[in-house]
Length: 353
Image 1: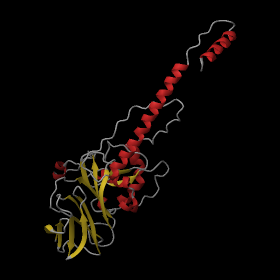
Image 2: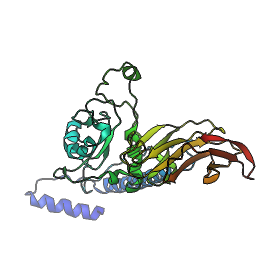
Image 3: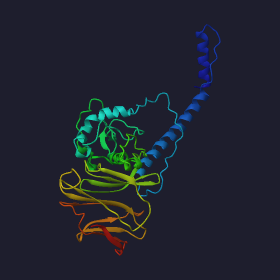
Image 4: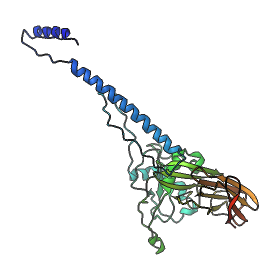
């Protein structure tokens, strides 16, 4: 508003109140100051959003897991009074609510021979973690001496919706859901209680929440998948098997960071004659490791037939997952050969049989 306009407004207000004097403040200077502040704060908010989004994508897809990703801390953002209201995020559910809603999903586990001696009710394994509708949560029976089962937390009114075992297999999950299932499978229990033969108490799995970890390597064979995860400067190996499996279908633990030429595979027989209730004879093999800088590939052979060749990434990390269909091959001659980029064998040895 100009100074002339201000004088006219003062005169009109003076007349409106029967010639009583009215002071009119200088509105021009504060208005200009507010406009400058809005331009500065608006620019800061936009940069903060872009940086945060880029870091989230980088953490999920980074091929250099040993470098910790530190998120930028944006300046506090002032929201104008005219901004639309922010929709609140879904509510965090209590553990009792989760146990109640997941009850119908756990019935399919109650029917398995692995849980035949277990007692109900089921409860949340990681009681210190927070969950919302749609999250995958690990559940344990009342006597915890077993592996966890899994529930996808339903919304109210959908507690009885069917969630078959196939819906929990790696191929049916998104990348974020696979990481969540890996995180949920971690357990640190009191081994002294197990060794004394006492009933293990129903307590929380005191483990870190790794649901925001990034996947930096993966391999799959059949319905099995192996993931290498990174959170900060720590790496984790996760093995996702078909559901249900004799040891729960998921195995998760810290991955050793030492570079070396040693190779240790894990093998599991599946089928009616094997340890798993998954139908169809087959043998699953999986492993993770980190090669020295001069090594490049690992070749796996069973009964003189090459079944898999794995190439390490730029940091030396490698993931192996392969399957021998139709039989239990763990008693057959099995070897590996580690080679450099030129194909020269640096080390060979037996990994099974």
